[in-house]
Length: 171
Image (cartoon, rainbow, N blue to C red):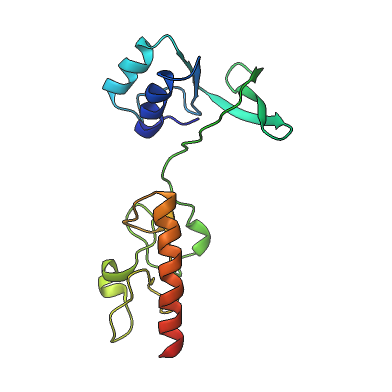
């Protein structure tokens, strides 16, 4: 599921191994979010079925994924397919609106941390690497501006943040 370049690259890769790949996209198509080169490759791959305007409604299974129910929102129809693997690539739009302006954000609404804070930093000491515009508050993972956007990196940042919290508490 997804309609950006990462989803397209994954679909092409998976089509080399899987019997079939369904590429579910919430938008009407791929042109807004995917490079033309990838769109051409997807259209040329018989193992890939593009499902635009489609949303997952339900996933079923016992001890593992067994089937997925999805709905074509334009047609109003629902399909159920026996599927054992699901990859979700829904984009990089951070959900930071709930912060209500209490932390400095970049122009894409990711949380600014460390040296990226510039004039948004209120103390004399420099901010720690993962520290936000609120001293003692840290951001890690995909929501942080400049992050690598990988699970392993987010885990590492989380463990680093614990050390920074100890430093702040010791001040």
